[in-house]
Length: 432
Image (cartoon, rainbow, N blue to C red; front, side, top):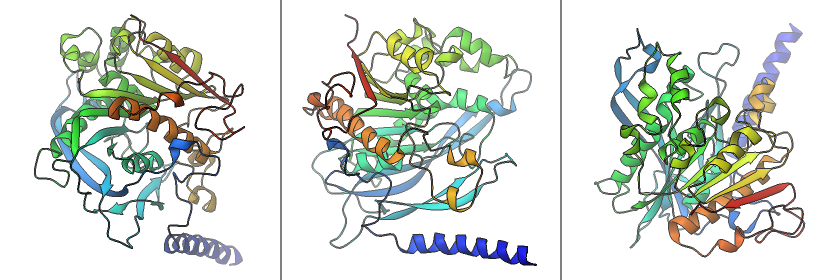
């Protein structure tokens, strides 16, 4: 009897703690993406208040890779939920605060039951867009496997506050809520990114809440892990024939990945000239032969790579750094967090993962062993702002990238004295 009462008390305490946390959300509370005292200069939020809306797009008649029979995939309508952040017009006294509904755990995995939780963000749900005489560049964001459109709100909100329209995708069959076979992610990731890019860009030309708001000729694509795998393909780094062949072994010999392979005429025509910049956080695939020295030459869009030196998912020397070294036909940067593993991109771990005593793996979906996640978020904000500002808005931010490669040698421009330790920034121009 005592055990039952104790369990009940713990549950009630957890519920009360969660409810209190929600009720006490204020502008003075630390929220993911807020600047720490040692945050670099361009990590600070911009001048715009931020609105956020959820939209749904349907990509019709797509191959259902999870139900292939004898090498043939039936067709289905692929529904994609997308969260859009944008500069908003708020009334005096209105607080740009919202609560995002998320889950821990993974669908279809009894060892990781889904547990709903909420966390705060600095955005107003369904706010009116700001009145503007100009248009805002578009940024499309792709999460990892598994993940969600809310995985990097510290960055999506931050960019919207600086004058970007930011669209983050829930990749169907690849989220916490609907995780399916990995083959769906392999096939659909870059297809989803291209589809959503077009759909959101079209919102700026139709009678939507973003009418006349989007500069669709200035687009950046941002991806983490499998999202990085996707954005590199969209930007010209076609997959190898060997990778396609290996993929086919898991799909009844199908050649569905063929249209994404370097050298395939259908693929070559899909590279979108409107994309002016790529940010790839810990992109997966190089150690699995997704690319080689030939296919990486197809990447010609300026690219900023971010990775941990101990990445045990995507790999470092033979993984992300090898991609950086092989993409010789574009200007690129490689920011390395020394001793970090794979989680260089997400929000910090949710507090519920500690309060509810969840399995350690749920905490380590977000956490990094050697870094304060909030500090990594600030550094990411700084460098993504720098890179996109240069390539999408022609801002004079070059000084923030013209630094010593080793942050331990000399304080980097934009960082406070003695603060940028444990970082390396490499840079290569495109081969002439």
